[in-house]
Image (cartoon, rainbow, N blue to C red; front, side, top):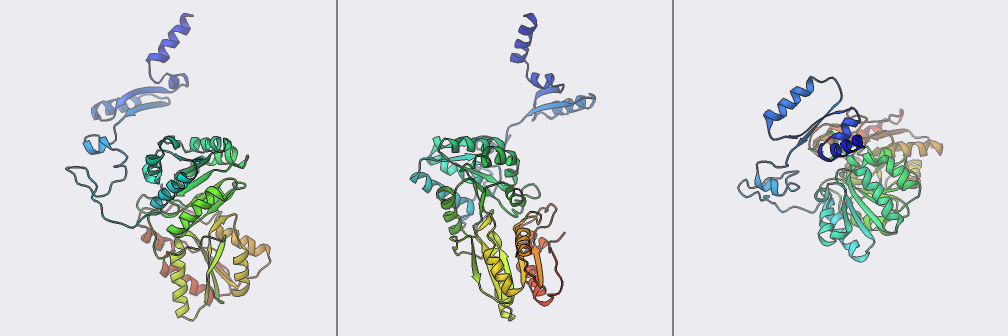
Length: 409
């Protein structure tokens, strides 16, 4: 009894006891803003030859009152007035995140079953705007994407329509829950995959290049890829009300570029017709590929442009019909090549026994992409207009050998 009483008081009063029970030496809590104290703790920890956990507490924005008062606002900082902390706003075109938030609010007004979920990224994903209007219909699970997907499964089982907005690079944390909690029961949950593709300045950790590779292994999932703001709005409505089972809508950071049309109806559509080369793409590269087709047309080369609106399951009928006519194929895709839609297209072509004169998959390769602007990184990967144009000319000119890649590394 005395031993149990001692342990009860110990667990109640002493932090870190759970780690001690696991054989991990616990230090803390330590004031992370007191550098002498923090350095002393680190020096002591170096002398101990066993697993150690140092519990450091800091305050986001410490020392700058506006950031202390509004840490989310200062997570990713635009130019601001130092004296007041007010963001210096420049009028800008709406982004994909803005359109997602506005569309979700509209759908939420029409259907009370819609619930928003975020993993500590309410502002970044736009879910906070939905929460402003429907505070009781949003759950922020903190930095726990795994739990967010499991929660979405529970909501779906109770007849709700959960919408989990998450950055592509963080979504991969949830793979196990997608398989066991969502897919096995074929639950209708909507995953809005923000920052898909190259995101630019955030660097290696934030590029959304891997989601297509792992999502294609999820049984029964549907993945939609809008290429314009109008398509995003329509596809989000489709995902919420017209799809069965799990569905993901993936879209890039920022706003529209060259492509502003809306062809969101079919799973795949032909944007340009041609007889010499099949150009296949999806999402944010659509504008680049159309620009390439225009340049080829001036060279007397007829390129047929096929845009995939649905990536998983892969709609191959339009592509197969096109390559049977042209005999040449170039796929432009802003993702890693392994497990990409391009590989799926080549497999479908081979399964049909279609012999092609030349094929090229242009992607982001197999490695990690460094820091840089999106335009710089597309050039680095060979996905800018000039690189794709030169590669397309090679496909048409040299139809004797088959290649499988044009990324920078």
